[in-house]
Length: 271
Image (cartoon, rainbow, N blue to C red; front, side):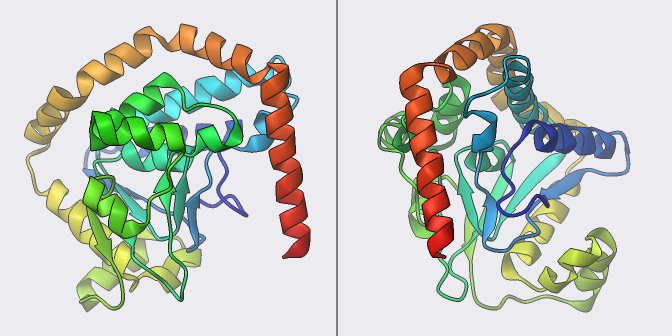
């Protein structure tokens, strides 16, 4: 992902992720894919807040449809999906990570400690039901119930302990010239300086591990655990969209969102 400064999820960003994923899936030789960020300090800050403040009536439903679609596409992909989290994965960014089959997170990088979680309540809104259910599926009912209510952002260690990520890495990791050569071919030039990073190395090895499993068996296994969620989400899609759009347009919600945007502007000026 490469949408500065924070890979915020706009309508166009979501559509780009879905389109790229589908194009990769169309190649039968490819069995796994890594989702990462061009910005080491942040995976994704989640929804683009500008999509929600004084939203355009015709754009807001399209935006939310794109949010639903990117989750459906990632969570239901025939590919083994690996999230390489070098930085923060917040709100919708956490959703992208949870929708993947495997998540690896950086423990600490130059005193930067990344976080992950659904923090919507702190903005005066709530995670949509399907996103909340995705967290329940990932970490269990009671931990998810508490995290959703408090808008908890987990440290790498806490995320690992609770099962929100599968691995936490840091410092230096073993890598070989063969792996580096393959990564150099796969990654775009602006990511070549990250080839030896522990998160990228771990994600690459995990992607290889998944790719070695016979694809029909891996896909059938994935359907066992994910098909019900996908069917339920698809069935409730229209109702969810109408509810979300109505909720976002509420005066109280718009007031909270506007205050959050103003706070971000003030913080940006100080920095």
